[in-house]
Length: 552
Image 1: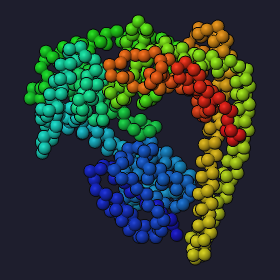
Image 2 (image 1 turned 90 degrees about the horizontal axis):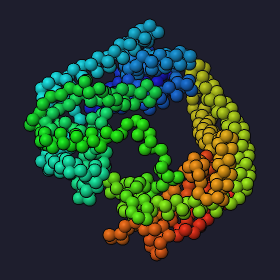
Image 3 (image 1 turned 45 degrees about the vertical axis):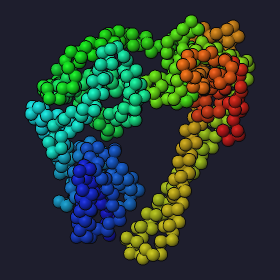
Image 4 (image 1 turned 135 degrees about the vertical axis):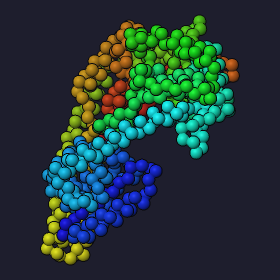
């Protein structure tokens, strides 16, 4: 008897789940007429067929096909399985190799008619895209909104494309533009809105980027022409990544924008809107590629590596006084999402970190010797894992062949399946254990991979930095940044009205830092050098100084 697998799919969440049941019922009737035995069904609900990679049901179907669990794939129509020529041809090659055929309600799919039907399915998607775009342009010509949400508006019920102003939100929009024109930064505006508990357009909190937007994409509240009574459409186009099947947006040139006046949707007067655009341009005039690259280069030895211990966000400059540059949590500054408003002096943090590294690197030869021993142990474990993985793969193949022999005995010779049930259950249980063992071996193999050049570079950096620290502060940033991945700052929140405070102050004003090291990242083991805690200028050795346990 021919063994069959059924595949069903519908594209949109606006369609009914009943569609899947109807497709499966039709395919079962077809199999009954053709004398096929249905052994399994696979389905994808509310997922487009234009890409195979993001359909879990289809992927499970192809994995089952590779195990040769059936002889035929049955679907209502080929567009249920494929809407893309490349997906069809790739899958067809694999199925032909496995000896598995495709059947639909119209009959068996051959090589030529299959290629033509794949072409027609893909062309249907292209035509649908063109027709949809034409329809949206018609909506725009009628003075209606062609899609997308905007803060300050809501859709009018039973009138597609029509918007109306929400006065409560419109007042917030006017306040944002007023503050922006008054020279407040987007971060300051977002912080004020979060402090007042104003609900954001989406998510939990306002952010500076919500207000500031993206110039190339024309996004953000300051750049939204709808507030000035103009509907602008076609700012971006959607393209599909052929590898992942995900839709991505790409900005269009401004000459491709479609603009329609909509004075009834105006929230901001022209003078205020234009003033905001001028300020936006002024703030960006120095943002050339050269200056942007220069701004990204580290200005201090730990630039970009200092992070807030309360929320994990980065810490950025928040002005300076006679004692030096002060740092504050960026999440607190940006949106107020972090509760720690404490400001600390950059010079003090750098002094603590350098002192810790100097003490820890007093004997660089011992560290490099330890690294060599550690890497040798990892190589040994990798070899053992590879041997175990090969054994499991052989056993998995043996189990698959035995299961296929049992199926053939039932189908070809007509032997009663009841006598094989116990053995099939044993094989399934063993197969699950073997697959789990393979996954474990794969993870073990990934963990112990460590490139020799990375170790050599690390050991060289340790020795160089140790020599430089004997003479004082390192002369080159690159050496120390080879070793340090992050400096986590743990500091108590500021007292009311408090400003910055020195890192070695007494009582609750003390600052503790954790230094995260590059070797920990290379080895996949967070308990490795240099990982230490310091408080009040005194080094406190942590577990990072201990050698790893025998199993790594």
